[in-house]
Image 1 (cartoon, rainbow, N blue to C red):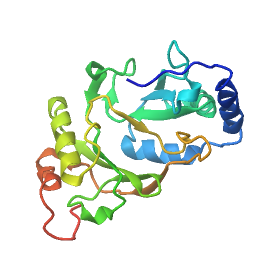
Image 2 (cartoon, one colour; image 1 turned 90 degrees about the vertical axis):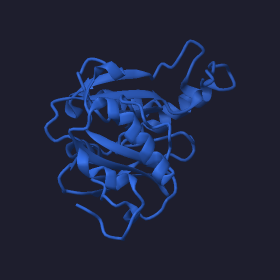
Image 3 (cartoon, rainbow, N blue to C red; image 1 turned 180 degrees about the vertical axis):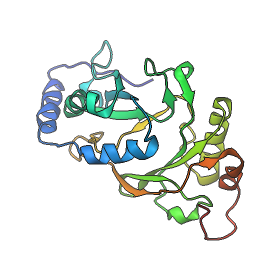
Image 4 (cartoon, rainbow, N blue to C red; image 1 turned 60 degrees about the vertical axis):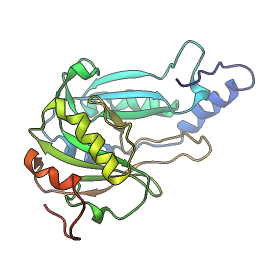
Length: 226
């Protein structure tokens, strides 16, 4: 459980400084749109999650920056920017939900498998080429493989296998998992803000369920399947 901080005289000025700093950090809408359009170009809404990036913006009673926001990026943009400037992480639920909630029970369709990879190694090691690569910071990447027809009940096990195969974060396996949205600032280290960006986009078709086994097996050659 994350520790909750009170805004006592020793820390309240830091929360104020974070807010002032945020006014100078401009979100990059093009990056956000690029990511979402590749994730699901037919989506009429997305489900966003926000929460404090640092303990300095939390209070004893909870997290004032924690929100669920549903809608198009256009409709939600100004609200998300305002929360980001105050010190919130802006994340998007990767799988398609009902547009009303973010529980696992609200998820209706698997959009992608994804890997939180801190190894900083060549993406060429993957037998199946990722559709999206997001550089979250130097040497840290999120990789996404768009899929079609993957049953909801198989998602967690596929995520687990993917993380174990490529030594990624094995905690990233919830059906309602939200991942940081490119184009919005991260300030986990408040003096070193960073802006996640989309570094690669692939235009190949989503993978079908029978193709995914190749992703979990040891790589036999350096060629991607597309």
